[in-house]
Length: 173
Image 1: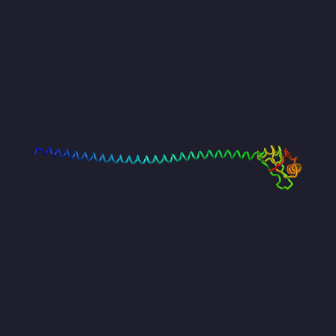
Image 2: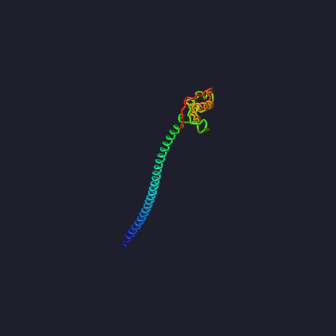
Image 3: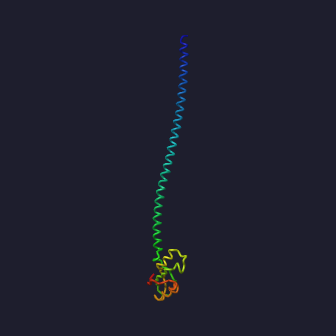
C-alpha cells in the first residue's frame, strides 16, 4: 500500500497533464481559427485590391482616351474657327444685289463703301458689320455693262447717303 500515494500522485499528474493538453489543444484550435480568419481576410483584401487596381487601370485608360479625344476636339475646334474666320472675312463675302437677270447680262462685282454708315444710316449694327462697311462690301450685280451695274448700285446705295463705289470688276462665277 505504499505505492498508493505514488499511483494517486501519478493519476493527478496524468489528469493535470490531460487538462494541460486539452487547454493547449483549445488554444491551438483558437489560434488556427484566428489564423484561418486572418488568411481569409487577407485573401479578401487582396481580391479587393486587385479589383480596385483593375478599375483604376481602366479609369486611367479611359482618362487617356478622354484626353486624346479632348485634344482632337480642340484641334477640330481650332480648325473650324480658322475656317469660320476665313469664310467670314469681309473681303471674301459677296452680297447679291439682285438675282434677276437676262441672258445678255453679265456679272459685275462692285465694292461699296460707307465710312459713316453707323452714325448716319444704322447705328445699331454690330461692330463687325460697321467695319465691313468701312472696308467695303462686294456686291454681285447683273447688268449689260459696267455703267448699268453702277446705276443699279447707286439706286440702292445712293452717294448722297454716304455710299461710294470703290471698285468694279467682271464676275465670271
